Length: 168
Image 1 (tube, rainbow, N blue to C red):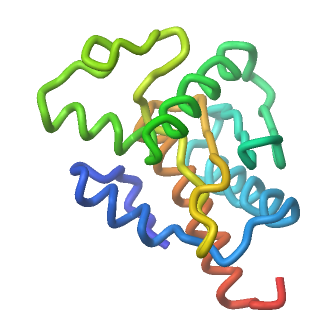
Image 2: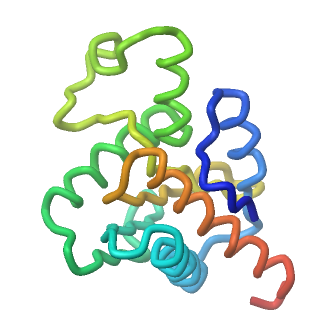
């Protein structure tokens, strides 16, 4: 697991990161373990800073946890980031990087409503081998790059434990 606390700086690095986050399965128990991994990392890496964690299959939530100190604004950001990841098929951080590398303005150039779409870090597609993207993981409450780092870090932590314990 990468503990550099640094989000990928290029689209290519984001793509490599996404390619490494393909899972053999994702069920409700997995979502709970992923959420708990994210929570543990956020407490370690960003102590005293509350986050919201939302993990869903495309048709329903699997894990939702809003730490004390979060509120409706966090729920709003969860939706905006999720909408970006679902529409573009990549992490909201990668979409942000795509527009930055082109020198483009996300909301102006896409025409998407900024009340519904925000290209900031924190939303990561959930991809299952042989099925493709089946859902989205969203973290909100920190700076965009921090949301991305803790979301990916939680996935990597869960993935490393799943590989070590294949019967999970």
